[in-house]
Length: 138
Length: 138
DNA sequence: ATCCTACATTGGACTTTGTCTAAGTCAAGA
DNA sequence: TCTTGACTTAGACAAAGTCCAATGTAGGAT
Image (cartoon, rainbow over all chains, first blue to last red; front, side, top):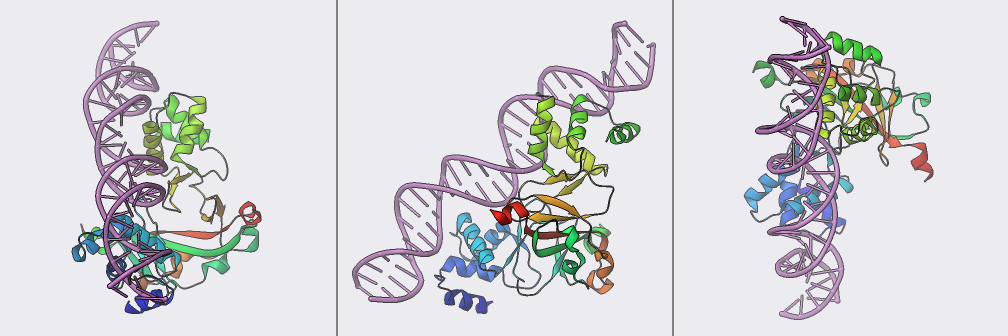
């Protein structure tokens, strides 16, 4: 993830303590935090960081294509640092946990031109729904 | 859609004027209103209907499997009356318009067991993103 | 036809999630 | 080290949705 900080500096990003901790929080596999969760974890390292800055920074990272915004349930959006590998999501309907998955097949090519209604189609998201192991047991 | 009212009555639903107008608003093809839009349209016929009742009724219809809840953008959820025909969605990234589409292929069978991580997978949603004809021109 | 009552509706307060702004702060180039 | 424009902050605001106590009513019972 320090690659990330390098890339951003290269793009003229001013490197502040706040942006650094937000980037650090997002480091890791299978991390899909909400903005508030990012804020809570960032606050552990930098107590005075504000919610507005977390929102700003997440928004910038999304615009730069470094992270993905995922909204699977109409509640808080989640942020997915795994933006450089094509993947989709498996969501637990009970607890909201998200796993990255890589299905076979190419859903984009499955949408024939007659089913595009004149849209310029730029991307596709596949969301699998189910119950995760812990919630199945409970 | 009057089938709908019959079905619901058969399930012991108490049939009120409010529930009737909500069901009527949702009648039609390619309708994907937000709760507030449903409320606005219902108010035209029944001015005193409250937001809470619209939310309650939509929630009940979702539980009964008569309509689908779609959240494509982290903003307001939309409600899709086309619950009895398998389909997916094509969303305009600019104006939020939704079209129902029927891609080829079966994404569920594209998710191998090793990619299910112990989840009980119950469903899948495919969301195509793009720009609709009117927004492309503008 | 009228009565009862459990279920439905209402308005408004409240919560969650996110945005905006004006004033203060600071990273990094000169 | 100085300067400056970009960054951060706290708190007000907004949008979407939930909850609750009081009131109303659909539809079965009489």
